[in-house]
Each structure stands twice: as structure tokens, then as C-alpha cells.
Length: 358
Image (cartoon, rainbow, N blue to C red):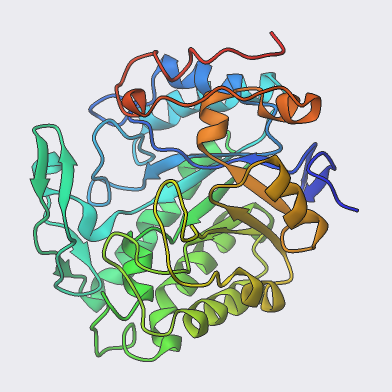
């Protein structure tokens, strides 16, 4: 029986366990999106994860809409991320960079750039800005002749990630951000080659993923999807068909792993009344499948034992427990995370959670 403590091959990497660290945006970079020394220590503390997936990291000014989130488009970003990856590797860890374009979730107050999306739509609710919460604004639809430039931004960020010492990259195609906005018919109203039928709406995902594979290799390229239900106002009328088609396409491309974030009806950070699509995806995606959302040790172990997943990504549990694999193995009680400090920019609630093995 496969367990959370079994090693797993991931392209050229051997991950010593299947307890992976999920991406967690925590806003500890500078206003110029440059990683800080706090981030170096934070990631190094969590190097016992089988794999760390970095916080969502902006590929360009256009795609960056979260205050104090990290970026990967400039040389200063590369230099500072190199300190992070060096520290993780020195502590025995492995780390992928998650590549992020927020699409219509970007607020123009951050950088003076109008948000872009699949279509002229507006996200519900309010954006986090340096001046506090502000209503989202309508995005302009990306022109078809801009798509090569967008793909080039992903490629450039992937090159920078490898230059910065990351072991691979994960395309953020989930959670209502740009790629997700193209995938789902609730936000994609296009009538060109990127809209309409499912095969058109998965085209941008396919083209960006292929470009990343061509740049860093399939064995260093991963993707994240969030199939079940609304995410930041982005939804689809045929989610099962859409995401199984996307997963089958990604399987054909040979990506190194696919991560799915699917909250259930009792989710503690997002809920969905839709059934998970993961069982359908498992049938068409034969590569490494990683599940994420509200897993504890028992649920994670049960998913592996049942063959539903190959690894489990833990988010807030890894935030509050830098030595999570050790705690799971020894049956040690977990620290609780403090939501008040999630985005507070300081050390408290970021690098101050104690390790039981210390």
C-alpha cells in the first residue's frame, strides 16, 4: 500500500515523501515584488516537504495584482529567488515556481495597467490593493494578436525560474485567474479560436503548457487546475467535460504532475456543492496526480491507499507546521495557523511557528 512517507520520482527528482507543500500567497515580498530574507527563511524551514510549490509568482507587471506578492520578470527577482532556492536545496529540499497571471483579478491601482481577460468581464467583489479593498474593474479582452506576447511572458518567467534555481515550474491555471478565465464559459465569451467549444477554450492552456515544455522540458513542467464549481466568479456549465478534456490534453503533453484543488461542501477556505472531478480526471490523466484542499493525515493517506492520488499538497498545515512530515510520522499534534497574520508582511505567523523536531 502506498503511504504518504513513500518516495516518488518526479522527472529527474526523487521526492522523499508525498507530503507536498501547496502554494500559499502570503505577501512577504517588497512592493516591487522582490523576494525578501523572510522568504528565504520561510521556505528553508519547510524543506522537508516532498516538494515545495512556491507561492503564486507573477510573470509580468500586467499579470501581477496582489500587494507584496513575488515576481519573476526582472533580474532582481531572479537574484533574490536564487537565495530562496539555494536555502531550500541546502536544507535538502526541492522547489517548483508557480507561474501566475491574475487576468481580470488585477486592479489598475497597483501598476496603472488595465486588467486583461478572455472577455470584457468584471470579477465580483473587491480587490486587495495598497490603498485597501477596491471594487474590481472591467477587463479588456486580450486581442488574438496579443496571445504570442502573453505566451512569451510565461516563457520568459520560466527561463527566469530556472536561472533562479527552481527545480521546475507549475502553470497556475486555476482559482479564477487568467488561464481559468479562458477555460470556463462563464467568463470566456469569445467567438474566435480561443472561445466557444471546449476544444477552443482549452487552447490557451495547451499552447502555454507546450511553450513551457519546449523551454524547460516536460519533466520540469506541471499544471494546477481547480475543476469543481465557482472560483472568484469564474464557472462553467459543463465542468466535468471541460476539465476531463483539459486533463486528457495535458496527459498527452506529458507534464510531470497535475495538481487539483477541489474544496468540498464543508471546505474551510472555499466551498463547493459540486462533486469533485478528480475521479474522472484520474481515468484520463495517467501521470502524477496531486490532490489539494482540506486534507489531514488520515484523508491524505486514504486517498493514496485508494489510488486516487500520487501525492497530497498541504497548505495552511504547512504554514503552521514547518516540519509537517515529521509531525505526521510521529503523531505529534499540529500547530493551528493564525489567519490574522496570513498577509501581515511581518515575521509573526510566517517564520515563527515552532517545529516539534527542533
